[in-house]
Length: 275
Image (tube, rainbow, N blue to C red):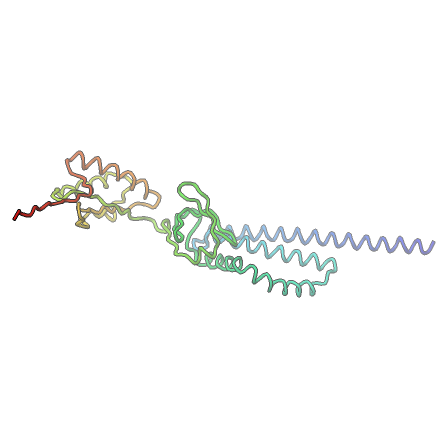
């Protein structure tokens, strides 16, 4: 009877210990989830209040911190269950060296993502050129940046490629200059053409009155005289003004009897006198 009682007592102690460990593990996971949510909310609030702390930087930090928190959670749970972390950490050290060589590109993208988050060359929704790729920024995580092109293609670029390329941000400022060329034939009334171009540009509600558009003769080409037209608009109106002007100026020049030239080649044939 005594041995049976001891067995029940040991079993009860063992079961209690297991339940305590399970409870502690659950509490750790719940605590990490709560901390993760609090940090996420705090970062989003900071992003909304501070201009320099952009939504892109906020998303990046949330994902990085989330990974760190869950690594801490896993190690804490292992400690609760009595797993010796020293061999695990030592093994991770050796594995880390091996993985470091194997995942050089990924590690480079991770650190490049940190540099992008710190330097803030673009925000969500900005239209950018990254090297030879153009599109609107949709998202950024620890490894990549996602863009959407004007023809609605999704492009994902590694952070390493993004940080190593020339980045041109067209949405960063409050206004953008539209550069266009109006070709007219030699012998045209250039002052009249300049006035027609200026009147057309100022008729667009998207054209900003300050600074005024620039309309000047820019080049004397082989078969035409080029007149530049450079209005200022807010970035989102760039293409609407550009495309509308191309058609409107053609109609305007034709209506006013001004020739829009095409490339011409004059050939003079000289005959040699007979001996």
